[in-house]
Image (cartoon, rainbow, N blue to C red; front, side, top):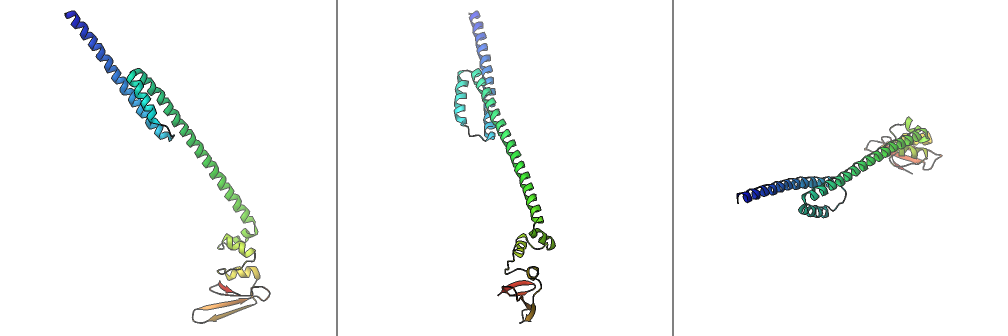
Length: 195
């Protein structure tokens, strides 16, 4: 009887040790699996983790070593997804850098072309005039809000300049006889009307 009791105790301790070993292996594989799930979420790929979780739990319940092997394979898969995301991010950042550099070069080239054009040369002489104003002046356009200096650049000095003051400060009439419209009206050097 003592012999049977000793054998039973030995068998019980072996089963307990194996159970503790299995518990530890299950704990490690679960931690590895959950860590891999987090990696997949970081990868931003749309992966149905629930189906993997079901398969993992089934493997783990059948055999702790199978569960551990499944967790290892799943970890490799998660690492590959993260690596793809990192490579994709790197490629995207490289493309953005190329586009930025190309855009800067394009703008520089456009600016050089502008500066060498008749519009750009006019703007060098009159830096406070905008690009649009320089284009209008060169193309002989007239508009409300243009300055008398712009008009003089287009037409030369007026044939007549007549000041008048009706209580609101000095207003001017500038006329060119050989142009149409011929008379412009304004205050403080800015055109407010023409006919």
